[in-house]
Length: 291
Picture 1: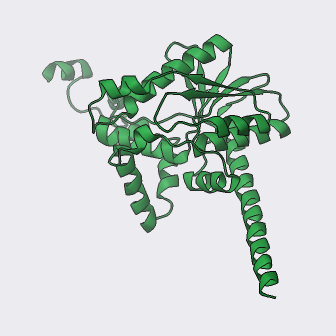
Picture 2: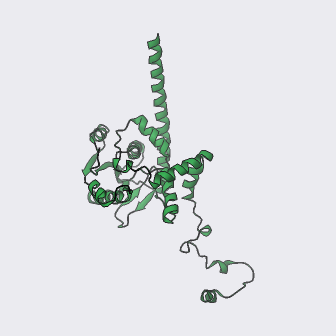
Picture 3: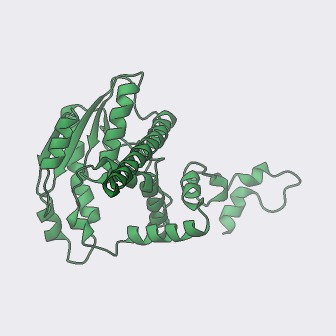
């Protein structure tokens, strides 16, 4: 009797997990599809190179795009690209097995950027910036050589809002990760189809899907990164008001130049000409000379 009861509990747990997986997948498909439509991320006959780092975000991105590819009314190609940067603990056989089992064309390219980063950056300092630059250069070059029209990255909503606050607090700029970006040399277009998706949903989905995750030991050893501090700050604020993260994301698409201070984006000088009523003071050209 006890054995039957135990088997029933296990079956109930399994069915609950299946239902939750379907719920998460539906939500991720909805928000990814909305982002693609809102920002025209994918068009007919696109050749999309999905950057599969081996983390939860990129695995989720690839899986969701595969599902959308199967039901979309347009035709587009997907190709998985993974860069082996020779980091300690890198084991990609399970990743390759997963890609093969899911009929995803792929390449794993080996380039030892790890040694360069370790040699250039003193111990204890942040590796991310140089590591990202080296990786980005290799990715751009590969995509250009292979003729891909788009490069898909796995950045999600939380990446966008954390980057915005980091830019404001540490760089004095209002900038983030756009859903669609033309590279400086105008030869590559980057897309971020998960830009509306929450990290917690992605993490839970990846766990239920049991993706063969490859950890980043290079960055994981640095616990006090600025990004983690900002993420904790947002989480603390969200405990008091759960709309804080979505409000920050909405702010990225609700810019009001007249309420900011950028002279290149708003004509502060010309406001005087638009003022109703009698003009008081010196003419504008004389005002400039007066100061």
